[in-house]
Image (cartoon, rainbow, N blue to C red; front, side, top):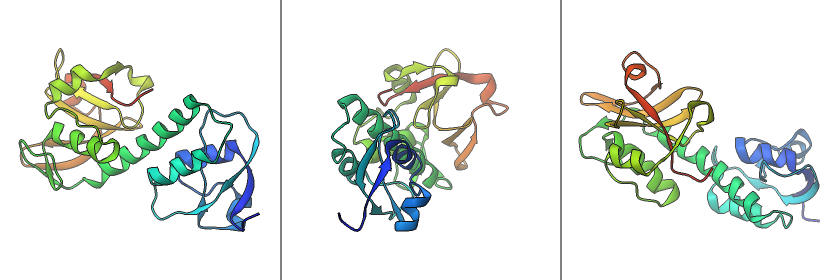
Length: 208
């Protein structure tokens, strides 16, 4: 067996997929800077998965797809769940990277944004999908989800009965958004003083 192959439970591999961290103490002992991945929906079974160097906090999609291809037990649904889990983590990570960038009306990056320009930029970079550059249009195309079911990578909309502002949900009640003229991209609570009064809802672009 290759030096960087080790039998691991898919439960440990699932955790690695979601967190991008070391898979388990036994794997870390074998290769401290290595990680592996598998979908969170699998029952616990033993499987052999190659461990690869972790170059960034979030594995590249090419690496994730390589991991998934190495697990013949997966159903198409399980592969989709795994794929989307990593997309969500990458979307949130890229959104956070824009913190401090300037607000500029009509801009969608890479160094200045308006609110819908930020969400458009992040989705295009991570998923290849082009969202409309208008918060109202993003609101109309998104599947509405409850706050309790919202996940990182979903969108959060403001101004009741419509949507004239949009942010990128990060989880734990936080969003990253292009706030407005004179203020830079920042992370804030989705229910700050102004936002709690004008909340419209959460929307989902990615598959569930």
